Image (tube, rainbow, N blue to C red; front, side, top):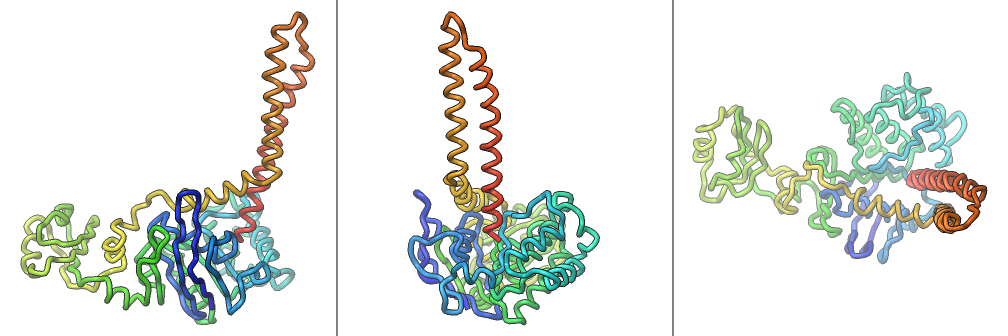
Length: 385
């Protein structure tokens, strides 16, 4: 069981995580929901000891999450951390070895999962040759290959077609039945509604609501009218009888004002639309999300990895001594080149040989800097796994 208590994390002026407490039981799928940039990925990185919280605590089965416990954890990050030049099977076995799974056992389990995800034919292909969906399947395999007790999945359906989404959902149910503690982080409310046992919604680093899917709907939702239609339904949101609306291309979910009857709504809609279906439904998580947060989670705004998460990784890379040393070398070479060049131009006999040496050193120093950054980026990606 995972217990996080009163977590806080601040980046310069941004309070990314603000007093977040949550509990994830064994044998359940816990939904960590929120709009892009809400603090989900930062919370996850604190749970996994990738980031250190400013305050608060995290324990798994009563023990602090430490390097010794990392082999019991499986993590699928939102951003991919696969080495593009590696062959698929080599990549899978490499990440398995990082978790202590090696030899025939690793190969057998890898082959079994590749077969299940219909990837056997790609085993010797380079990662960069795979489609986005297949790369996501490979990353999921690396997260569960070592049979972890605690699984964290950050936007696991990203890039997957409906068939593979169903397959991944089935595997999640199997992991749940095996007693795994699972965190399912997403901004796709329909996926969370179908999969999660309990959930919490984070916005601006704070928990806004939490509980079972049923209790959240009872507490925060209102019964709605669902319309399926042909035509342009954009006018539905502007009707005075509608209190809240979620309108898509061919269907809408509408919360009516208390004094409005279903007949009145149907008559108003049918004047401009060909109504195929009209029914009362319990509120969806999507409508509750919009009501509480005030934005549609299906709209792909600036993601958290582009705001806080990747900024954190970028700062780690920039602070690495190897990167800083190589960058300093670049600056020194170019400064010498500029200063010596300016002085030589004014001299009676320019030192062309020294200028040539400095000019040759400049691209070499830049290449070393680029290589240092790439090496550190790989290490950061590896640490994420």
